Each structure stands twice: as structure tokens, then as C-alpha cells.
Length: 252
Image 1 (cartoon, rainbow, N blue to C red):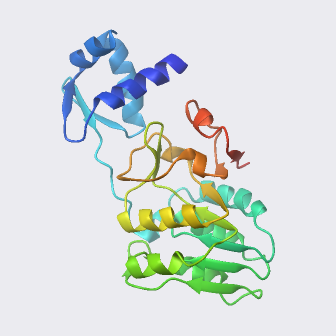
Image 2: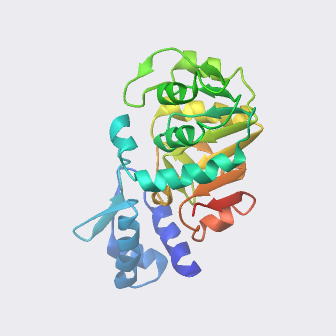
Image 3: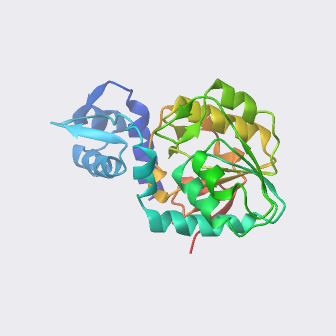
């Protein structure tokens, strides 16, 4: 199993954006049969990492995330399970940052019973969910509203978020790749994440298993930057190894 995963990483390392490689060339480079390459490419294609066409393969073009409302309707049960497991790490009176990802918004919903939270966010949905209740204090970044994310993430918002040092940052991610780390597709949201990683005492990452093995556009962090990882399925190699220093929680 480990040998096959290593082979798939080797295949991905051979590919470059915008380039196509013949299967026979990949087989020769790796000193394996074309059938072996086809078997590995089938798994890579299922994960969304590559595209196969007529005896050749290329890296998949990262697809942009859909509008916020659509993402909030996708994999709802999984996101709620992750959120329920994540909120165990938040106590009354904590100071937290929550980003604008859809799973983070489900975390906000799961936190409505907490008391006297200090909530820092760039997400309208998080602000609407947790502001004005239970003695919470809310700090909402401003600037230009991104309607696809229902969030503020421009330079004004980034400068605002950078002022704070939350006890815990609850973050989402667009993709996690074994060779490239944590990645996002939106440059502004990636910048917000990078600020949160740098400023927070601890980082809690909430992520669906489908994000593993994907490619994004912008690297936001390394696995070692994550203190707590909450997901919905046990990690497969090599991700278990990458997050060996992280507290990994699999939502029941």
C-alpha cells in the first residue's frame, strides 16, 4: 500500500500545470508497466488530481468553489458531525477566530449554546449566528463583501484580522496535498488563513475527507501548523504521517 502511494506521488511530481504526459513515458520513467500506471491514474482521477485523455494524463485544473449557499447545502450531515466534534475544544469565555468556510459556519451553529465568547470573524454568517447572544462579543472584519463567500477578505479585512491574537482559530481549507501541504483556491481567503495561522495560539482545522489528495492554487500552511484536525474519516497514509504531531479527531 505504501509503495503504491509513493508511486502516485511520483506520478504527480512528474506532471506540471498545462502539460500532458503519455502513459508510456510515465511507465518508462517509473520502470513499471502501463497497466500499473493506469491503475494508479484511476485512483488519482477519482480523487480529482488528474485528467486522463487518449493515452495521456495531465493535472486537473482546480475547480473554483461554488457560491456560498450551494456549499452550505453540500455534505450537510458530514459537516454537522465535524462541527459537533470540533466544538468540544471551545469553552465558555474563549476568544476564537472563525473563517468563512462552509464547515466553519456549521461550527458556529454548533456553538450557539456557549456563553461569553469573544468571536473574531470575516464571515457574515458567523457574525449573524453568534453575535448578539449569550453575552458574546463580536468583532467582524469590514471592507468589500465577497458575495460568493459571504465574507470580507480584502486588504482592509486582512489588516483588521491581523490585530487580534485569538486563543483558537477555527479554519477550513480548500485542499490538502501530500506534497504541497494545505492549499486554498481564493487568494483573499488564503491570505486570511495565513494571518490566522500566524496570530492564533492554536489552530483547529475542520476538513471533510474529500479535501485530501486535492490540489489548490495557493499554499496556506504546513501540516505541522495545525494543532487539532477534525475530520470525518480516519487518515490514510501518507496523511497520517504528515499529521503525526497533530491531535487528530475523527467525528463519530
